[in-house]
Length: 427
Image 1 (cartoon, rainbow, N blue to C red):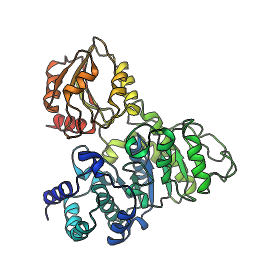
Image 2: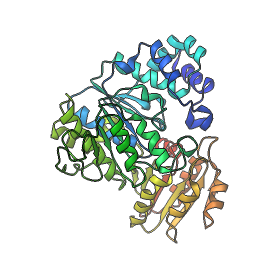
Image 3: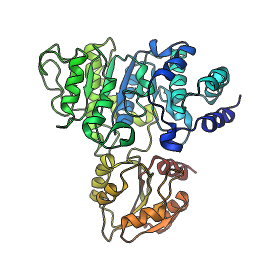
Image 4: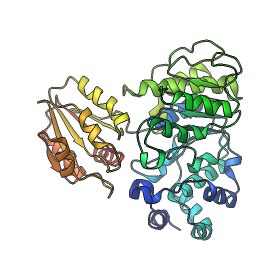
């Protein structure tokens, strides 16, 4: 089987969530466990760090992986979605999985896949875990796909669980309150496995404490030595003393500050409560070169310097509130925004967050997925001056043609749009 044939099979037989939305989502672990058993139960053979959260779980996963990689370890990294190539989702020390590995996995297991009809993400999870075992990684960093409790990756028993934050996204699956969403994310907390929570909130704090108590990692109090749950945004407890702040980082989005602190606390827990050797120098090296070490793209990434062109994968109000703040801080005389979203996001809330004024010029576009809101609909929701262009690459070209050298261009609102931006600027 060729790689293209494997891709066609994956996308046509069981299209992924990022293409078709809710119809691709299969909650529950039974199907995943059947598939894992068929391919040799790789989830039972991995030493893994499991990362969930509404936003920031990708960046946090990459930061942890980069530090572990800088420690001399062979590190697997499983994330989603991809921006340009499916191979981005599965990496070892920053190198994407070979296309033929994907083709071979599908060909070898196609009869069983046809029989049980796993989702796209269930199939990719089994492929990633089997590949990491085959390549004998020292440790794997595994990002949750959606939610936590019922996510395919939750067949793992990790050495550390990390939950970055809780916000409103995928509410049709996870619930309509922060407490309900937190309960789903808290499902990755396992008995006797240390856990780091990146961002606390009055509505979610007790959810995590209750789950930690159920799993035997709370102890008698947050400041006791038998406690195995840490809250990175409060004090990052480690035997009753405050951890120092995270080191300098290559990621410059202001929203990354919390992700950096979460990853830093997670690495301190790994140093103190597992057998992994993670020198302080490796953490600094990993944070300083996270993009080059792991291949991370699209996080307040500079694509061009004249005019300054930035893309970012923030795609809901929880993430875009920080992007909007950073856009307001840009000093360029004019800012051209190529912006598009998909229809299951809180677009109306996002529109109230975006900066407005004479120096902001909006080009709304339609991301390359049938889940997208149309450019015309986005412009109508904006209710101010702007233009609508259906083709994302044409919209990007329009911004390039109209921006002066001293201006700035921002491209975002959707992962698909950021993928188009990356390919446009690499031509």
